[in-house]
Amino acid sequence: MNVIETPLPGVLVIEPRVFSDQRGFFLETYHRQRYTASGIDEIFVQDNHSRSAHGTLRGLHFQLKSPQGKLVRVSAGEVFDVAVDIRRGSPYFGQWFGEYLSGENNKQMYVPPGFAHGFCVLSETADFMYKCSDFYDPTDEQGVAWDDPALAIDWPIDQPILSKKDAALPKMSELMDCLPRFAMSQV
Ligand SMILES: Cc1cn([C@H]2C[C@H](O)[C@@H](COP(=O)(O)OP(=O)(O)O[C@H]3O[C@H](C)C(=O)[C@H](O)[C@H]3O)O2)c(=O)[nH]c1=O
Picture 1 (cartoon, helix red, strand yellow):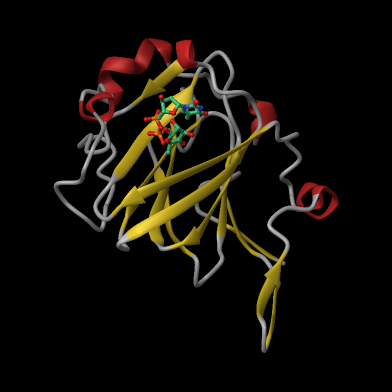
Picture 2 (spheres, helix red, strand yellow):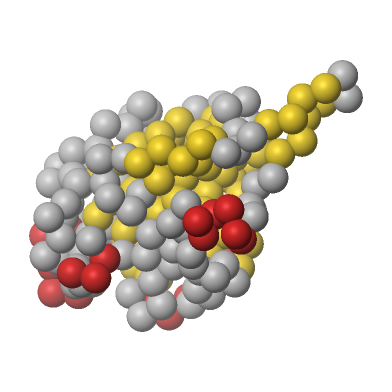
């Protein structure tokens, strides 16, 4: 597997090794020893799968009381996946990184706790699968507006399909008091 660092320290792109033959292909999507050795040493406790139609945008989401590290991939279709550093005091506060993930390129992205996460769907539909390092807590759902000008994320779509919740998410400027703090140990 190939692990690629991104301009956002802690956010990684992983290219698993793919074994192809006349039947199709095989790849390992997670391996505790190998991923820990690559810096992804979270204990994952929950796996999720969402399917979305073309033009859907889910995000930007995060949890505060139980922040989740996420190892994300697309099993079918294509998305543009985005991580945003929302840790107050981080040298990268407010910066984002995006990567195209697809059932063709088999790429994964690791989004550490303390980052907001979201994606938009470029294919007819997209099956989005991800591992989380803490449990979902419906009382702890937080988010920031996908189109916050302070983030200026270069989404490859406009006028996305949004949930009512996502369409009403606040801007970073409205969240400052409650955003997580950057810890020097995370450098
Ligand atoms: C996230 C989640 C949701 N749900 C239930 C709650 C709702 O009744 C339904 C749809 O939830 P929601 O619209 O919040 O799903 P997404 O918009 O895909 O949310 C996710 O989207 C972005 C991209 C993320 O990074 C997060 O993992 C997560 O916030 O599933 C659960 O039962 N468990 C869960 O872990």
